[in-house]
Length: 124
Image (cartoon, rainbow, N blue to C red; front, side, top):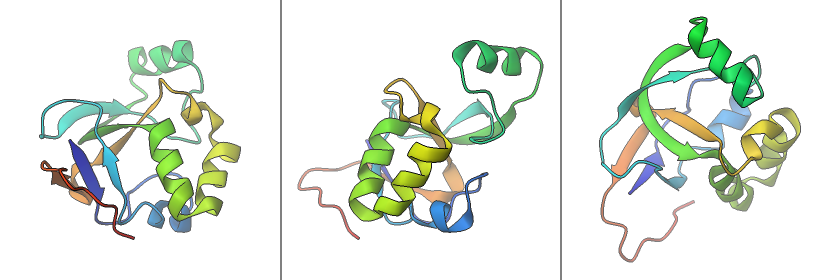
């Protein structure tokens, strides 16, 4: 399943970097086509390691978000095709999201679900 980003996502990245996501279609990590409740942290102000992320959850420093999980490394690679400067911003300012195990959560309000991706082509 894929989601298309249809509006500028909220977050800590600069607005022009967040706007670069609009129009991209990204594969969702989870198998069903519904948003889920996730506990999230800031991409800049949040913890950078698994242990510090766990401590943030246990200490209540996370925020609830209804959305879709997307592998952040894959998302940044897709962003590179559209906007190399935006992808470079992520690699420079939030390199911990370039790991294959990391995920972004895109708010459900900025996503459109694409369930049938047969003959799928990216629109730019």
